[in-house]
Image (cartoon, rainbow, N blue to C red):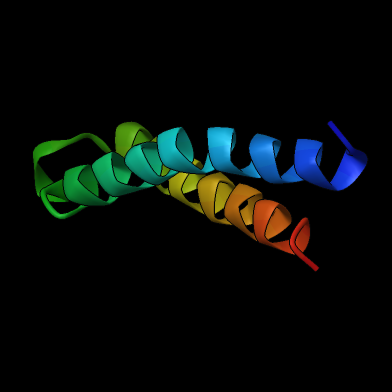
Length: 62
């Protein structure tokens, strides 16, 4: 398996669980009034870092 193939496989293998993390975090944030401020801040950090990771994975295609 070549380097390009390895990168494609890595991107694919990481993208699906990352999408699930991002989606679940966004769903929780839709009801953020249920949570204390510390939890909401943590969820927002998870969302931001998930978006950053998604950008890194997308850059692997370039």
